[in-house]
Image (tube, rainbow, N blue to C red; front, side, top):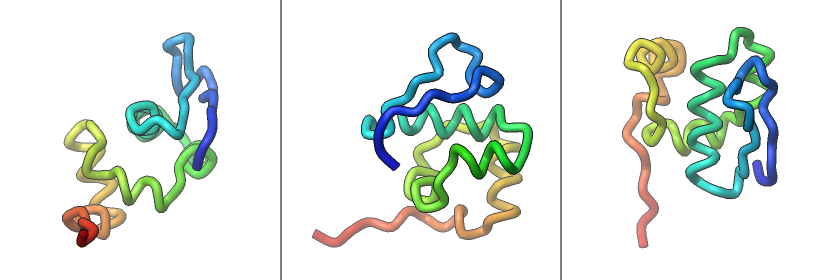
Length: 86
C-alpha cells in the first residue's frame, strides 16, 4: 500500500484523516486508528492490508484488550517479529 488515503470521518474525527502510507509514522497511526475505531469487518477489510498489518503489528500502540482479542483470533500475530539477515 502506498500513496495518500483519507479515512472516513466516522473513523478519524480529528478533522484531518489524511495519511501518507509511504511515511512509516503515518502508516502506524492510520492502522492504530482503524483498529481502534472500525465498527465492522467491512471497514477493517477496506482500510487494512493483511501483509502490512503483520509487518507493523509489534510497533502498533493498542489497548491491551484489543491486542489480546486480535492475537486470540490471529495467533500468528503473537509470533516475534522476524528480522532479515544482513
